[in-house]
Image 1: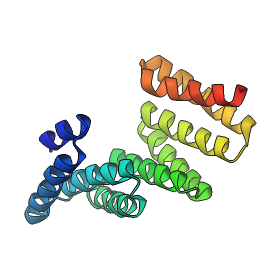
Image 2 (image 1 turned 135 degrees about the vertical axis):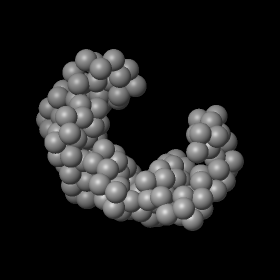
Image 3 (image 1 turned 90 degrees about the vertical axis):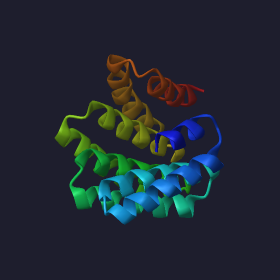
Length: 168
């Protein structure tokens, strides 16, 4: 999987996909549900980036099922967030919000501040897309200090972008 990640981050999504598909085959043959989940999640990210939302959604649903099968609460939360992104990108805001809220519930239960902040940011972008500027501001405002405290500059920039769009 690491080689696939190298290809993915360098922009070679075709070679990354090939690596992730081979990883999925090996994990499926060995019956390792956790590794299957990682592989289908990585494939989902590739399809999501390419705008192939149907395939990405299928992969993220499989990833969620694998996380549920092995009881990996962190991956359940991440998987729900991934599904939220897909639904949001397709304009299915109610479904996206539901996924983000469930993701946040899991993150809160685990004390996962990154997961909470990510879910809040997702909810803020949905509110912004729905023109609920007050709610978008409130949610981005709640997410921003979480990321600032952690030094998560990329996510902090996303929070500030939401707030800047509201101000414009």
